[in-house]
Amino acid sequence: MKTSSRRLLLAGAGASLLPIGSTFAAGLIATPAQTEGPFYPTAFPADMDNDLVQVRGQAAQAMGTVLHLEGRVLDSSGRAVPGALVEIWQCDAQGIYDHPRQPGRERRDSAFQGYGRMLVDAEGHYSFRTLKPVAYPGRTPHIHFKVATAAGSQLTSQFYIAGDPQNEQDFVFRAAARSPQQRERIEMRLQPASGLEPGALATTMDIVVG
Ligand SMILES: [Fe+2]
Image (cartoon, rainbow, N blue to C red):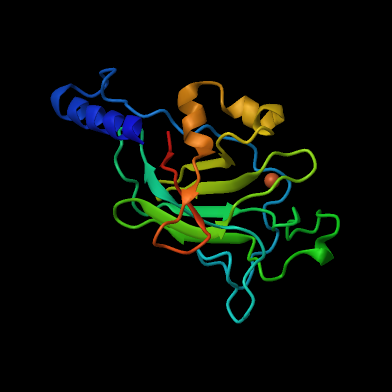
């Protein structure tokens, strides 16, 4: 966190003092693009707001550990990207996606929304209430996400849990985390969601679109 804010300050100072095109003007390493994978929804759920743990009209809350995932969508100079649409999707606490290609889909937790989307605010902020991701055969725990900017560019990627021993065996993670700076963009540091929700976790992940 300290490193990112320092880099932001440097990028800001560079932008005001140096001509465009100087090496100082471009400050932030972009979030590495990663595969969409086979489980992007073929049909969106009726409820697709930014609370994936609670499906509208259902009393039950999804199984699993709640994770508050928030951050900002920034450009490489550290400026907010207002108007960006952020989508996330992931499997339920049993490792089951709500998708036709998912074996055992009928056993999925219907109290988990599985997919959510939101527009960032004027400062580029997004936030989701979702689940701490779990592993499923062949993959380390991850949350898929996609960002579409108002200008028409798109980034598809995935977030991981920092320090999960399965990350180093995961071919998608390894291909994306080729430098410490790229790793920082995709590894979520999970902390107790103090004051937000008992028993829940929280993490802040800025998404830097190129
Ligand atoms: Fe996946």
